[in-house]
Image (cartoon, rainbow, N blue to C red; front, side, top):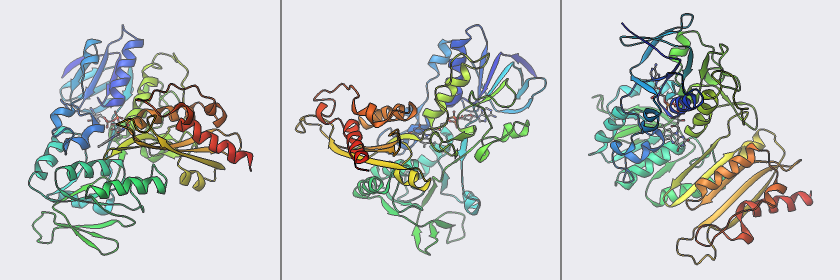
Length: 456
Ligand SMILES: Cc1cc2nc3c(=O)[nH]c(=O)nc-3n(C[C@H](O)[C@H](O)[C@H](O)COP(=O)(O)OP(=O)(O)OC[C@H]3O[C@@H](n4cnc5c(N)ncnc54)[C@H](O)[C@@H]3O)c2cc1C
């Protein structure tokens, strides 16, 4: 056994682990920070779908850079931490015994597969989207000479992977439980439009159904179809299960760290476990929703990075007050040339949670005048509290700017801004860059809500 020591041991080199390490070093330059990660090459997880199509085309173009960590003097070790003696503060990785003072679990998440389909993973041609280069390369290589692809799951990962395979001329069918694709993040009228765009490029969607069996008709261990609850059978040379992710807490459980909601590691507001020398960040930690305060299953690189910043600055005392209490579901995606972005709760979710809301929408164009060559239609929907007017959700459909505009909506939600503040918001507008100052969409959707509130 080789003995190594560090002040802060970070387990996992994904977005949460990486940001925790960098923040820890920034705040404690004299401390030795060691990141242990399983894989030599770490992929940018969010861009994995783009490996399969024309956007990136191969996993070598999706490699995460470690340059900043190296420049800062953060040490790394490639290997898997198999065990930890929590009393003695020693972790075991291959032939290494690593002693530490502070520990951060950033062990992420692994694909979730429904128990009834788990055994099908043994069939040739059945895949998940694991955040692992060798796995992604295997799927990419297997798909080269295959035509019929079934994707189970109509969330953003399923849809992004479907669109990329379709761009390479594959016949892709997405199967989902909801009426339209992306319905966890968008209200039906917006999800429907995303779906129509997906259908336009030839991807088929079978909604309100689910896969009950994955079949190898010839009994040769090679997949060739899926059977649905509706008894429909869809031919498939490849089946991709994009049915969500679960917190990777095998190690945490083994060493007695308490778990919270949905199997994530229990943490307080500063990402500390019950033992204040031990932290957990990212997909492996338990979360609750910012608005409803209910347990949340949201797993995002952006949220994970924000948590890494909190943990990294709270290791040796609380340096900054944590700016958020709860996870905002905030994400964006592209369906063909249209961006779809969402933050906070949708109208459907708010109504299901019995939240008293008023909704405002505005349709415009993202340039002014609309004759500017790259102008794109822009649609904004805001969801506000009926009493108080605070904005608790927003959805945007439009050009590339939607990806950043939704971050503004996220800040508005996080800051508990109401529609009246947004109505008088001072914004920068420019013909080639934004919509018109006279009809800035976030402002206009707030105006619509204010009018509705007047009439209640
Ligand atoms: C296809 C895809 C697309 C996505 N797109 C987006 C997007 O557009 N926007 C967005 O915000 N989010 C997106 N996400 C979600 C995002 O990728 C995750 O939320 C994010 O990866 C979580 O980061 P993490 O660091 O917590 O965990 P992970 O990225 O899962 O990293 C955890 C790391 O820890 C390592 N590890 C685990 N156990 C050990 C151990 N015992 N010893 C050593 N190392 C260990 C793992 O090997 C892994 O590398 C996407 C995810 C996928 C799969």
